[in-house]
Image 1 (cartoon, rainbow, N blue to C red):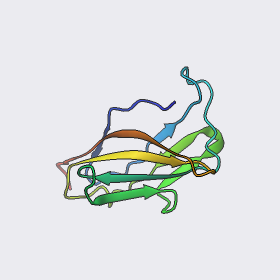
Image 2 (cartoon, one colour):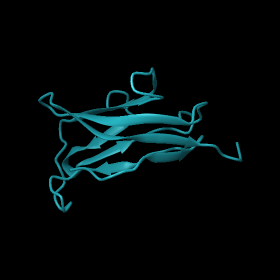
Image 3 (cartoon, rainbow, N blue to C red):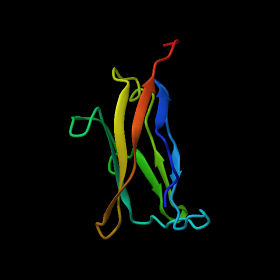
Image 4 (tube, rainbow, N blue to C red):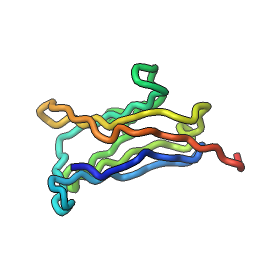
Length: 116
C-alpha cells in the first residue's frame, strides 16, 4: 500500500524533496522492505509526450531507504526553474527480481513566484 496523494505543487525555482513511505498493510503499521529496489519517475506534458525531467536511482535523483520503506525524490531549484507549469508523472518501482509496479500517477504543477 502507498500513501495517497492528489498531486504535487512546487514553487518555480524551489528545491523539492518529498519522502514517500510504503507499507505492507492498510493500517500503515508495517513498512515495506524496499531493499534491492530501483526507481524511475518521468515528468511529461501528456501521455506519450517527450520526457521533461527524469528522476531515478541511476541518476541519484531518487534515494531508496530499503529497510525503512522510504523513497525520497530530489529535484533541485535549478531543475524546477522551468518554462512549463503542468506535467504528469508516476513512480515506477522495480524490485531485485525485475518485477515492476507503478505508483502515484498524479499531476505535477510548477507555480509561479513573485521574487526571482
